[in-house]
Image 1: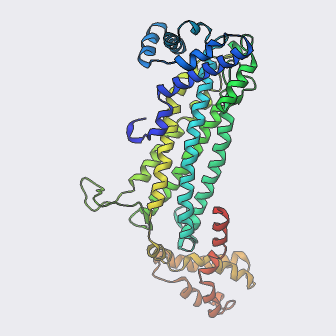
Image 2 (image 1 turned 90 degrees about the vertical axis):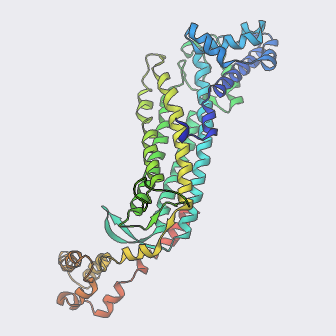
Image 3 (image 1 turned 180 degrees about the horizontal axis):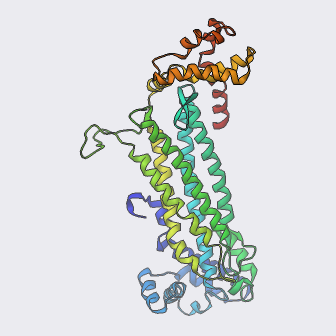
Length: 432
């Protein structure tokens, strides 16, 4: 990822220095268990702990010749360790190191993303409770439907991100596996006890059957989970973008002093942050299909997945980390306009009460189809007048309506309280 959308802590996970440090730790832990089992001299893990180092420039130089990154790494380490280096990597294969390290990196990334989700949840909880009674219009197909509250809108997104957190916890658990099983994964040259020991030290559990590589369905689930989280980000971002439209203006991104919205039009206040989040969500989701395609490898292994993961893993994790942090900030600072929400709610002359009138007519003894026809013919007059005519006034003049519902009872129907009577309890339960 470019620096513009990169936060340091996540980026460091995928830097060469961190990767090689994990590789060295894996080799050292394996040597510790091998020494305990008598497979290698006890001096080997001691040498690795005391003298084990690597030089990234030297690794790059060696790799240019040998065309193999793990061999280049081991050669660089050997130049520091000396004679004991001949026992390093005993019975192991490159994928033992690469895949186990990748599991460590992805769990490290998941831990950051889980913290990011906590920040988003905290921001949504605060604003949902703040606006649990703030009336606004609910829309379906972009058209006025019935009243809701702004807090209820946010509570729905809170629930989505709560589900996202559970999915990510499960995805982290699925990828937290260790594979040190040798060529084609049969443990012919390395004891299963090595894998168990290394995994326990790294917070990983042994892979069931590695076939030399960790099965990529685990990774596919991990990146698919990131993709779903990205879609939840976009879902909320699009809601904010719609609410910020000039014709709506019920909420908008914070506009800081000195900020400029357009190089040409000084009046502009654009939803640039949520537009950016929509774009970042596309980047994260772009990793999902390649991750799914990585599941299908030849026989016990090939490396068709390798180049894909070197690109998509950092990009997806870094982009999602940035997006979640940005989203939390947007929600925390979101400007909300309750007065505009009420103006918009009342803009269409009471059409939002049409279902309540329909139900009242059916309860008064009119067949549903007839009741629908009666309410719709009055509602269309209000619609075509763009709210200049009021639904309640037309209904009071409709003989079929008045024959069943008294004017004073119609007045009781046109109240907002019924729509939000349960909303507060739902919000409280969701964010509890």
